[in-house]
Image (cartoon, rainbow, N blue to C red; front, side):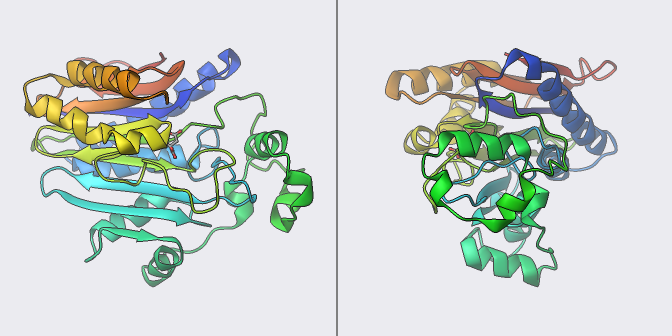
Length: 316
Ligand code: ASP
């Protein structure tokens, strides 16, 4: 069986001076996922490892680098799915968790499928996943974007945020316009032909407290079955109502390859919604695909055709 993996670092409008950073982050995450697959690891382990790398990287809107909601809090969502068992795990509205994707994986391995907010936090504690500090997640770039875009910001008090705003301990730049989007995701097929998908996000800048987008919703922001694995990014409300990830998997089940399915599904999005975004997909033949109707989509992929070389990365 051919192994393959593709990751994304979000859709949106990425400023040209940030292209290199976004591509590099995607390449590094793809290489990490690829080494799991090459060593005979599962697609599930590969997508979790790749997404953890993207959550650690402050340049993406997931884990460290997540955007703030209108109240100045960071509420994160994530979902992971094993296409070979159809097991799924998701969390939404969690705070102070460094790796939401790993919490979602633990949910998948429990009797639950989806936990939110305080229940998810309690589950994390029970699983021995420690809470991180607010400043471990907050970046200068996201703080600046929040402040500029939030007319109520001056009226809000949030001490952790105030103390962090000068520290920029993660070395972020503040020249980015992707803060509204920038979700991360990975999809892979392993040597046994098993497919897996993972998506993680801070959501959308200045979102309403408690707002949940497509990212942790099965069939909307991620999906995996025996045919394909998909991770999405974009305007979540539209991805939810059109069940974009499941739609792409269905296209593969009906005979499309990964690239055809990606294109068809994004065409459907364009025809039925104003929201923009993109998706990545791997099919059961080890082919990868990607499509978007947003200005940009940051990605990196490795398949057996290009494994000897660098990951194929780009900002489409
Ligand atoms: N889809 C995510 C959400 O709506 C945002 C994104 O992909 O950038 O929460």
